[in-house]
Length: 104
Image 1 (cartoon, rainbow, N blue to C red):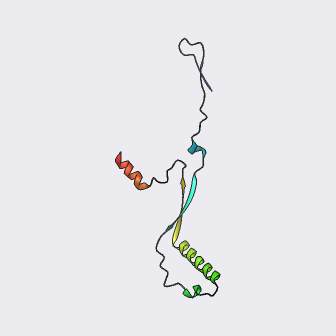
Image 2: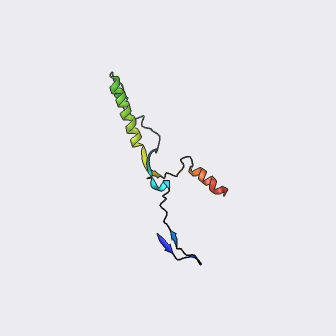
Image 3: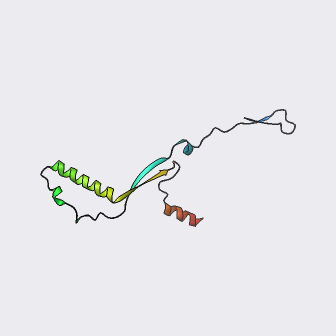
């Protein structure tokens, strides 16, 4: 609370109250997103041991294929972590921001 002296011939003091309002985007925490970026195309077809996929057991074949795909994606991609503010619009991309800047 801040008291000020009377203004002019007024018989009372002016009081300035601090604002307790906090904007919504400052109340909430930022969101962290993780994105996988594939660096190159998957080109290990020559070194693939295709006999691993020729099993009689269907469940084992499916698990082998899933493990192989996960290995290839992990070895040929990088992960990027970034934060998004709550007031940031997801449809506004860098290209749209550039067009907006050139417009003004």
